[in-house]
Structure formats: structure tokens, C-alpha cells
Length: 488
Ligand code: GAP
Image (cartoon, rainbow, N blue to C red; front, side, top):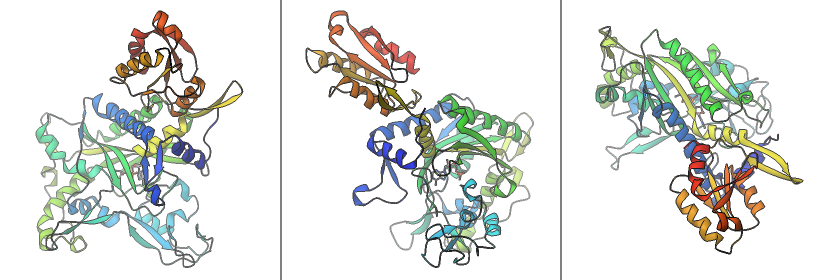
């Protein structure tokens, strides 16, 4: 078994086979932004679909949502992002490079995501012995200061009505602000979840490791609402459910683990949090976060009730968030507009929330790294991606053995039929062995070859990627065969 142990190998495979390219490459690239190519966009769509199928389609207690990236600015005041979503940074006086303070302290690599501002400030006390990661200068740092991670932009065509808004740093808040809408328009009853997949944006100080940490990325989040007191049980449920999602899609168990957050790592809203971590082989071979599962209590819905009470002041201060204090909570907050009425107990309360929050791009990277393997065929190295069929960008490749004797016509007919059901690829160029290798490296589970015998007995060979075993089956059975094998 071989692995992609160097980041350069992963980047090179992704580029060579059209999985992932640097954004704006012909202009020299844009740092930390990436584009998914023909194979990569299929992989990413399959990861998204597999998540949606498991989180929404197959569950009776989760519904979907797709909300806008731009949201009312007060959303971010209420959620805490406007004031607290910052990294504490320092600038090297020698080379001017900005670094996250928590990335300068020992063991920092464990804490890959944003640590609470208070914790980062505590860690920032003594930088006199810390080394600049860019130029190596020791103790040459400016005073640590907060650096806001949300991107700002202007909305509105006229100067008078233009206002500063933010690109969302998480998809979660779109779910909280639609809680009432979903309650009022569907028949959901507690406990239930709302799921969303979409782009999020963070002006990360340290971007890292290809698509692992970028400034524009895609999240897949569920906010699962439940009665207070049942939250611990649901937290356990989601930990197990989400861990299984990765292993059922073929990720090796030995490369996955759960890590509970230390108290000083917990975000301001969380009562408890675990990360699903993957042992990425690059860098120092560290375990890194794939997904966070948090118990957010009733924090967000209560905060948005306060946000709703602050709207008048927002108008008075002409939308200047820096001048606005969030209004205090009503004493009757349990009966507020974002409360839930339980028909059975006849009680009204603010639900608790369990949030599994995954990254689509980060999952793609982990699935790619985990699926990569090398073996030897007839003394030659074979590189392959052992993708689970649900994730494989192409499900079946169809080849005529040679480009004559009517074989291309039979193969092309079969391709035209199969592509209605599966994503397929037709290839008639070059030696068939080389065509197999190309598909192995793209992770295609099945290759179907039309040869001379096909004309005699209507059979074709189907070759399986991992075992390379070939069997002959009747042309008319190919669709059914693939349906069963691919479970589609
Ligand atoms: N709503 C909670 C939340 O956003 P998070 O731990 O900040 O929590 C959840 O993000 C997941 O989103 C992470 O586990 C990761 O997979 C993904 N993610 C976060 N920041 C990212 C970035 N800069 N680049 C790529 N993925 C990121």
C-alpha cells in the first residue's frame, strides 16, 4: 500500500488529472483560492450528494434549506461574529508578515481552527522567544491585535442607501434565522434538524495545505433542534452518525478519530464540542479537523431574539454596527418569537441545538488522500484511486478494443444508453492497457470493453478497478450489472 505522503504529490495528481487547479492560474494564480476541474467537480458534487442523501433524504427528521450568502448585518452582531470572530495576530517587524498568535505558540498545530479570542489573548502574553514562521526573526513582533475574519462589501447602488454587509463566515446562521419560517410552513416537530450546504468566506490569516484551509470554501451543516435536557443524548447520536458517514464511504478507520475540545478551545456558544479528525499524511502527519460537532445550547435562537429587539436602534444609528449594542434579553424570552410550543407538554421554550458542521472541500481532500494507492502490474507501477462507487467521478468507462470492424459503433451505442443513468466516459484512443491505467488513476470503478467476440455472442468484458478481475457478460445486462454493483 502506498500513500500520497507529500502535499506536492497530491497537488500534482490533482492538477495532472484535472481534479483541482489554482484559481486564475493564467494570471499567476490567486492565493488560497482553487477551482475544481472536470473530475474534481464531479467528485465534489458526489461528496455533496452523499452528505445530503444521508443527512436529509434518508432521515425523517431533517429538512433542507438553501439561503442567501448575504444576510442582514444584525445577524452577525447577534451571532457574535461581528465582535468575536477574529484571530489575534501580530506582525513581524523584520519582514512585515502577519501571523496568528496561536500559531506561534507551542503545540499550535493541534489548534487548527479559530480559538476563542480570550484564549488567544492569554497565549499572546510573551512573544519574546517566538520565531517568525516567514523569516525566522525571534521576538520581533508588534503588539497582538484582533483581526476580523469576515469579508466586508457594500450593498446598494446609491451612496445614500448603500450599507456595509458581510459575506457569511458560516452557513449556520441562515438556518437559525429561518427557524420560524420552517416551523410555520412545514409539519416538523421537535426534535428535528435543518440542513444546508453552501459557500462560506473567511479572511483566514494562515491559509494552509492546498484546499485544507482556504478563504472561500463550502460547508455542510445541520442545526438539530431538540428539547433542553435531551441535548446530551442527541449530541451522542450525531457523533456516531457523522463518524459512520466517513467510514461507510470508504474512509479508513485507522485514519479517523474523535477529539474532544479542551475547555479553553470551546467557542463562546458551545457547551461541548468534538472534532472528527483525519490523519492527513502531509506536514508533520498531524491529525486535523474534518468536522466539528457542537452542542450550541439555546445560544443562537436567544441571540437572534435579542437581535430582533435591536432593529430600531440599527435604523437610528444608520446601520453602523460599531455604534450598536445588542438589546438585552426580555425576561419572557422563553415565550419569544423564536420559541417552540410543545403540544404534548403544553410548554413553550427555546430549543437546544446540536450542530454537526462539515467542510465539503476538506472532505474531498481527505477522500482523495485516503483513496490513493499504488500497486504493481506486470512490473509496472499502477497509481489508482480506490474511491467508493458513490464518490467516483466517473462510474464506467466504455472502450472499443480497436478503432475498426464496427466496434466503435457498438461501444458508442452502449455509451449513449448508459450515460442516461451513470456518469460515463467513452475512449477509443491508444492501447487498451493505457486506457485502463488512466481510468484507474481517475478512480473509475468499471471499464467495459467491446471486442471481436462481442459481434459473435453479444458479450463484453467488464473489468473491476481494484482487483482488475475481468468477466464477460451479455451486452443487454450491463446496465443492470452496474446498477447492482454501484448501488444506484
Ligand atoms: N458553524 C460552525 C462552524 O463553522 P468551524 O469549525 O469553524 O465551525 C466547520 O467550521 C467546518 O468547516 C470545519 O471543520 C472545516 O471542515 C470547514 N472549514 C472551516 N474553515 C475552513 C476553511 N478556511 N477552509 C476550508 N474549510 C473550512
